[in-house]
Structure formats: C-alpha cells, structure tokens
Length: 518
Image (tube, rainbow, N blue to C red; front, side, top):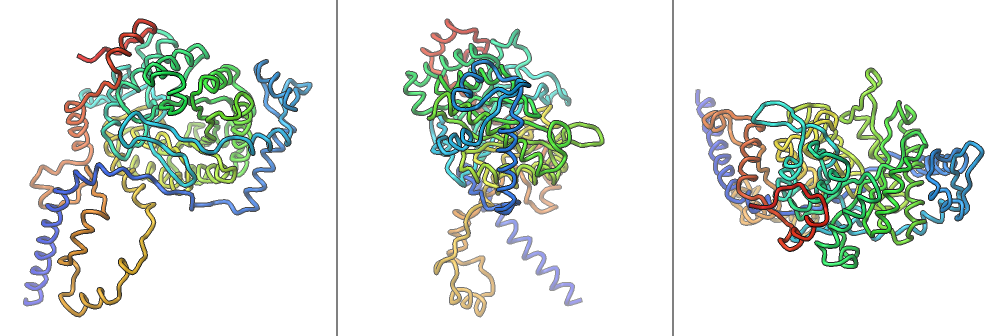
C-alpha cells in the first residue's frame, strides 16, 4: 500500500514537472520557432571510394561511347567545337577530355539570394537547405475535404505561407496554376506569384526561351537592373534537360542555355525512374543519372564558364508491381544518398528531391516516408532538397496543412545535424558529481534553465502535452491543428513583395493575371 502511494506521488511529481515544462516551453516556443537553422550534412556515405570511382568511370564511358540522342543543332555545334562529335546514329558523344575539363572548370562558389531578412542560400559544402517543390496539378481543399485543380491563387497562398515558415528555406513552385490559358501566361504568372508571395529564393520552370526572357525582365525590374540581379540572383530555373535513358530534351536545352545567358541560375536536373527509364540496380541507376546530369553541366559550362549551374540528380524508385513512382521507401533514401555522394565527389553545388510520399494526406505514412527520405538527403549533404514539404500522393497533390506539419519535421531534422559541443563547459565531472551527491536532479540548475532557451527547438504543432491535458482540450490531432495554423497565418499576413511602381511597369509589359494587392 505504501509502495502504491509512493508510486502515485512520484507519478504526480513527474506530471507536475511536465506541466511546468509545458508552460515554460509554450512561453519560449514562439521565439525559438523563428530561429533559422541551416542543415550541416555530408557525413552519410553509402559508397566507398572504390565504388565512387566505378560509378564515375561508368558515367564517363556512357558519355564517350553511348552519348545522348536528340541534341539540338545549337548544342551539336557547341559540343563538337569543343571536341565532341555526332556519331552515325545521331548521338552526341562527349569525350573524357571535354567532360574532365568541364568538371574542373565549373564554378563551385554558388550563392542564391533572398530579397530580405535571413533568406540567402550559400551552397557551400555541407550546407543544406530544404523547401517545397514539384508541379502538382491538385491541391487539397480543407473546406471541401478533397483535392481539386490548383490555380494561381493557390500558388500565391502557398508562397505567402512558406514566407512565414522558418524551417522552409526557399520556395520552389509546388503546384501548377491550371487556370492559365497558355504556357506563356503560366510561366510569367508563376514567377510573378512566387515573387509576390515570398522574399525567400524562388525556383520555377520555363517552357521556352521567350518565357525565360519574360522572367528575366521581371527579375531585372525588381532588382533594379540586370547587373544587380546577376550579382544577387533571387530566382532560379529548374531544367529537366534529359528524357532518360540518355536522350536530350531539345526544348529544355534551349531554356537552360537562355537562362545561363540571362544570368539566371539553373538547376541541371535529371529525373529518371529506377527499373523503368534507368537500370533496376541502384548503382546502375546512379551511374546513368550521373552521366545524364554531367552532360547538362558540360553544356551550361560551354555557354558560360561562370554559369551558376547546380548538379541536380533526382533518380526515383519505381514500384515494379505497378510501374508507378514510389518515393517513400528505404530504396529511395539510399538512391538519393548515393547520388548526393557523387555530387560531393565532384565538389558541385547540388540539388535533389526528397519527401515524395505516396500518402494522400499528412498522416503517419506521410510522416515516416518524408522523414526517412528527407533525413537521408540532408545527412548525405545535398545543398538543396526540394519537395521536402507539402507534397502528397507521389507529387500529384499539395497540402498547405502538410506544409506547416512538415515545417516542424524539417526543424527537427535540421536540428539533428548540429555538431555536439564537447568542451570543459559542457562536460564537467565536478558539476555532475555535485548534483549526483546533492539534490539528485538537474532541473533546478541555472545552466539547465539557460540552455532551455538556447539549446532546444520546440515544435509549433507536435503535441507534447500529457494525455489528460490533451483530452481536456478536445483530443484534436495534428491535422486539425495544422488547418487552424494555415488559416491563422494566411489571415494575419498576406505579403505582396512587388513594389507599386514595378507592378505597374510589369503589368503593362507582360500578361500578369495575379490580382494586385487590395
């Protein structure tokens, strides 16, 4: 009986301390949630040095002996002038000397800028930044309780939301504005809505060189001049220059080359599927993807040796039972990590995809699939991880509620990369001994209270309350709280980061459809 009473007393004591901790955390969580954390990756290496060399040699052999089909005439002329050649099957071959020269000559010092606050992305080795991405045709409408076609206003809403979510470092266009009448309207208005809704670096795509010039006009106007933009570029263009296996997309090549000429950074992306458009083995898929991505990097370098070109292998797993993409499994995590290790081998600034869950809603499946693949990409040292938040249903749908939930997840992943501080201050046998032989716990220590404010990142949505407190508050799950959070954020702040003078000038020159600020 006495033992039961003592057990209850201990339980009550723990509950009391937990309640005080909940109260303290809630008081400081707001300040800590605004702490920007840069991931520190590059320690995870699924390949050893010999395996990296084999994959590199295979990629070089593919470029030299197989080459890529369907090059544009401009690319053929440029590559052949640099030592490549077009074989009798009209495949463009890249000799090892040319590829090696490009690898040595491509710039590594790439920085992508924001337009205010702590929003710049320095793509130095080991620096990891996470954000949105994709081209989802559907958005989850919480009012309807189902997915619907996405539109321009949804894109602007997503940008406004990301602008306020601290652990999302950049805004890569996550959905397609399907209410645009043609591709020019889509390209121009996508860029405009992204830049209107957030000051964070924006990643978009373009369908034609003419659209690239339209987008450049927007950027130059907002920056003040072309030179000002080129010095501090706040927008990049994603380019999928290859249709695997080993075939160029001539239109995408033209877009990439025009972007380089305009001083716009380019993400040189290759998006193959293991077992479908790439070999079924992880090593073979990485080798082919490396070759295809290197081909784009060579071309960017030939257009301009100072091009801001980011190495973007994005191989994805195929569920061989259905042929559909399956981006949330352990194989995907390993595939991405190996691709990022190849980027580190070359010393390139890098970009990849992680977080492509197959779940349709932000549930347990969504959480474990995203956390698995995003964490591996971060630990492998990808400089830019797109699709890391908000994407659902194999990149077919976007959920704003998922974005705010994933913001918590990303904060935890980024925080897990912090270096452990081992010093005389953090490891003291005397201090431990004093507490162990004295009061018996560290809760009342001054250092504990001080580090409560400095060493811990408290989640905004994840629920750490006791069961009774949670039940008394209505037993609401994280999706319900996320829906409230989205409503609060979008109702309290709807920025429009395009100044009135630029807005007038650009609307007169371009087919802008986004409604101006009220």
